[in-house]
Length: 450
Ligand SMILES: *Cc1c(COP(=O)(O)O)cnc(C)c1O
Image (cartoon, rainbow, N blue to C red; front, side, top):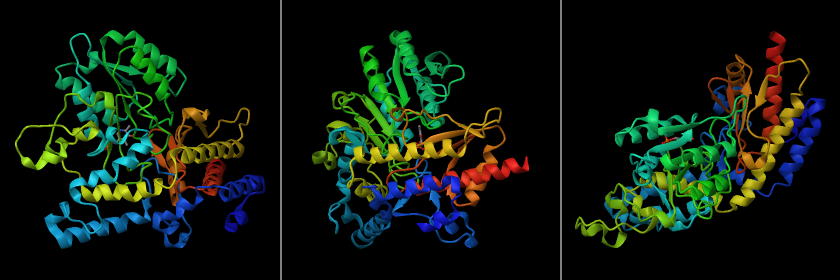
């Protein structure tokens, strides 16, 4: 760890000492060794940069690979090689493929605060959103609107538009687009509630993100859901950036349905298998069906009389990809060692440390234009792991490229935002400190050239 000290500017030494102390006291520090952290030379493809760990702050986009994942995949390839089709019912590792989803739904449910029966591990996020909307979006002439943010993630926006069109509607008339107030970057809960009140009689569905992907704002899921219920509205949540990030209580909060992917904070690998939550109270709904939603005992009787599995599992359409399921398992086995409450506690501290270091290293000089502003709320209850830095026009891409060249991995969202997401399972406080020091150096070099 002393290699950091050698490089520290005198002004940043105190922060570094704090980082080292926080890492030493971190009860979750052991989880990092269960992941493959790309080295600096691997991630930059520059051998000369050396084999120290890269600074990977991009778990909000693609989580890192748990060490166990390759082993699990190898085991499945072995069963397939040796047993062929019998692997569905006979499995060297006790994971018969016919019930492979049951090896992950319990842990997945505990991560999102649900009963096991309320969670299905299946498909992909956008496909699950369409399946959920098939059940939960039933527009009529009077009630046809979907309340959604103006800057929703494109896939969610397209999904809603196409659902409206499939029902013969016009997105122009049927989408209520929520926007921040003038000059604000994030949505005010009061404005969301006001929109729900104003459109209560004409709304068929409210669809919101648990954590907004661009700003990093965590919406007040419990309050907004309660208000939706008071108004008699159906509410679904996209938890892409919230699952494995926030301490969710989907059941207790009375959420109707939720969908999420597992390759972000849940580290299941690119395009990994996704999640669907359907509240137990709602699981009798009409749905788009396939054979995998049919009750297990009689699924192979093939009598073409559909009887749904109880709960969210009844919304499964196809048999799941076993390789995808065990890849997710590799990460869930790490999650199983820690409660979401403990992970969230570290996450809050990591992100607060990130914000502190940024404020110390980029003090506001009167009259000087700041290189960036943090558009994520400062209140820890209104954000997850991620901070979004909105750069002065023209600066972001240069900064992003320079960070990447120094083995600091963050992500850019056009036009001017860099998202930085320290994740509690594998990031350290010293990672955060290194990021801020590197960013400071880069910005100083750019400003010296200007
Ligand atoms: C990441 C993300 C998606 C991705 O959708 P896929 O179906 O997994 O490709 C969708 N919506 C939101 C809000 C996301 O953050």
